[in-house]
Length: 256
Image 1: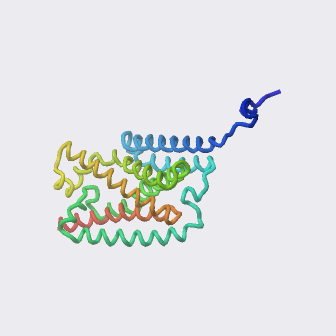
Image 2: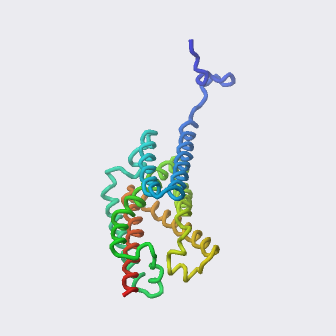
Image 3: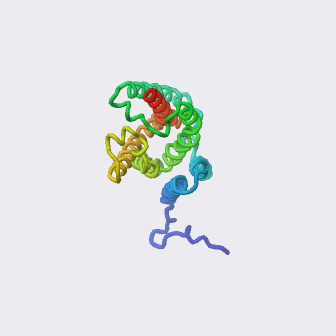
């Protein structure tokens, strides 16, 4: 006869030992696994091949969603519940409108216009392809699924709202370290402001981490406020996509 040792009564109390800690332990394991996958994904995407940089983040995001669904995470915990789509859409429209207004003001003012001079978007056609295809499919949607979807859900199970805002925002900022290595060299405004060399590069990376961590905080607020990842996806896309289009327009106006 097989005896299940873990269910035997305690000799001291005569009662079954409590397993109330087990779900929380599993939640901690989920957080650790998600972070490990994100770190590995970031390294592969930025320090291997060009094809890996294109496909790794979208694939990893889909794997994380499937994995957490299998672990019992609800669609609402992932920000993907249909019942929140309407509210998410309303917040999306407001977020996009605000960003477009700010970007328009930014390229209209001479002092801030120089910060849009990014060599990555020197042509309008290239900026259109980037903003409408590459940015949403390769960056925005996968990152939001991973961070405001899966990571948000796992962190909330362990630490609640404060943990999601603090740890989630910090991790999102650190996620952008590798992509910020050439930030100052490729942006005329930042190069003029920070200069060149190693210290300028470090300052650019630190600034990028702080800025993206702050953006992550806002994305998280939208996610919690609307209950859907539609709103942070819209804000994230409008920041990156509108920024790319604005950079192309500024380059075009400067050259002409």
